[in-house]
Length: 365
Ligand code: GLU
Image (cartoon, rainbow, N blue to C red; front, top):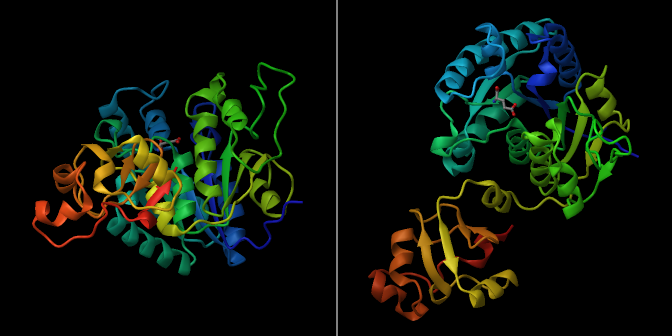
């Protein structure tokens, strides 16, 4: 039996496909979503809406037949479309006397501790005032080339849900759940009602080809589930166009696929896992074995090389099995790699500890 009647914080994500109909903005649908969310706000539930649509709405405004690939044009379309998107929401929520606020994010803003704390303060304040924050990726400035991009709002909404300790993330999509195969091609494909653990099988279901499954579709939703589940937040992939979809999910109806929350890991560990890494530390086999046991810190003797440039306190990747926060910068680590701990202070000419990364700052991924 599903039961979300106690959920106090909910993130709802709406995809572009759900917000549009026959290549036009579906204002009636936006009104319905506003109605459903306003009812929750009236009940004292804190809701954050993550909405796509900027580039799509911009394309429609300029009467383009499809979203262009050219990055500069996409940036311009996002700037045009985001304004239209917010106008639609503001109008729709106005009818229910609920205020909305716009927040545009990039991956580095959420990864960087300081900017993230600013963001969290702002979101908490808005929620306290019963204002619905409407979040989208800042597609005007975040492009793949500068590595600041989420790329899809599934992962972005999961990060938001994790950061604000939400109880539930609802992904309103044009797919009604996770299937064992592409249901458009295979009549025997079965929809999974519940996923308690992301197993290799689950990843395989998501990775199979077919238009809805491939392009960012299910794969990014499974990545989102990984983020929310370890944050103690359940996630539901649900058919966005179904009548009363949000209230039905909260009432516990078995709609879509539920990814069940796991035990919540600490917010610091979650921050380390989800942050954008600024570099990489390559360590030898012996050090890898010791770190995987989770009982030891990383000592300089196990380090073979460094990639990228990072400061003390930035998040880095260790080989490909862990993320961590070092106590030294890449320049300093480079000087002491392969050395014995007792020599660190002499080489770095400063007072420092034996280890490069404390064990509590290493998280296996
Ligand atoms: N941020 C993009 C937009 O608003 C959409 C990303 C997505 O759909 O996942 O157009």
